[in-house]
Length: 38
Image 1 (tube, rainbow, N blue to C red):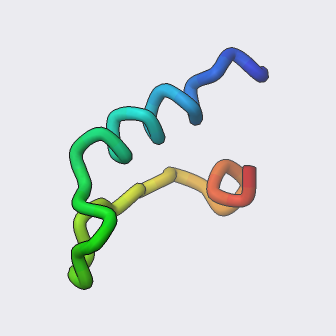
Image 2: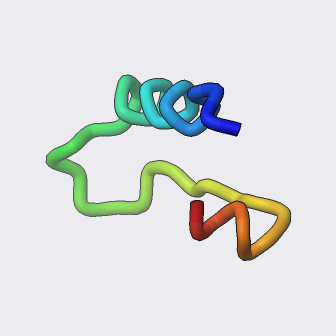
């Protein structure tokens, strides 16, 4: 709906991960493929 939910999730993730790390630090799980594409 364009309410900024994606941005809210991404800001939280970017604030906690180490951008120079080489391991998986975040995993985003969505209930449907359509939501994942968005």
